[in-house]
Length: 403
Ligand SMILES: Cc1ncc(COP(=O)(O)O)c(C=O)c1O
Image 1 (spheres, helix red, strand yellow):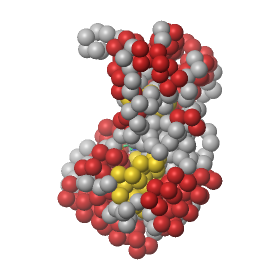
Image 2 (tube, protein in one colour):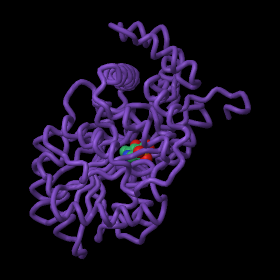
Image 3 (cartoon, rainbow, N blue to C red):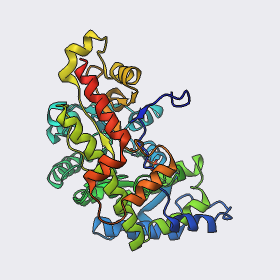
Image 4 (cartoon, rainbow, N blue to C red):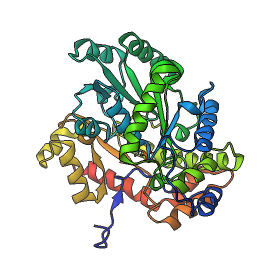
């Protein structure tokens, strides 16, 4: 539709769009000539830098031997699912790739149900129930906080309860923390702080450094024998599939993981922008009485339109898929349907990503970064420099008024 010259409000694609930090760009340019195959687990300098970074972030000592890097955390998630036995247990909703990965390797999937009425809160009792009823001997739980699609975060008390259940049932947990540095203000809590012996922490440079296309992800395995065996198994999968992440990228990533005040300030600035932009859309939708929980990190919202089920049905819209298609056709708003995240078909939930709106080109993204230098009047920033976001809210207002 864009190519045909049409206006489309692109809320479909979750990609942080800010310009690459010059220090990281320089590190990549200086290492463009690195062309040898490297160890499957990653180069020692990068494993050390990632271990130090996570030791600071998690507040406990992580050794370089616990680190493996891969071409994106997505590839690592697949390799861990392949390396660990058992059924994959997923909250509902959860990120689009976990379930297809499990299906590709023939793993059963158990879904923890949730409700739009409490913002899709993860209830430990429901996890407990799923595990109790499961016919499978082993289980792999995938958690994600800050969350794509809901924008929510798992708080320490909840993580503690989940950790106790996992420990009792000997569940291996994959904690997808790729959005950890995009948390708005409050501290990010990791399941690994409560269940270090059974949690793998996944991360990478795609989100807080806007480097999705560079394809570099990280995983921290538990300390000791279990973690060592798991890492070896994942390294074997990696070695047969991708050998090692690209050599120049690995060397440049050492800079990305350094505790550099300039880089930290850049990450803060990007996160403040994501927060201002995502909260603006959330506030606007809330004023329209759209049910949507408050975002706490990342750049996503997961509103629910069940309230308009009757009028939508009269327009032929009965599922989230049909709702997404209807919004694109009639209001030029591109979203993803809740079914892509494992929601039941009839639940009228959509995932909105704010990362592209008013940042459609690299130049626009660079300008926005420049505007957010120093103290920022967020209201003025949103009112004056986000025409698309304001227009988008008008379109949502008109859409709801038309029902
Ligand atoms: C929740 C979640 N996990 C993992 C990924 C994959 O990130 P990577 O670029 O490291 O493969 C994404 C990317 O959209 C994501 O949203």
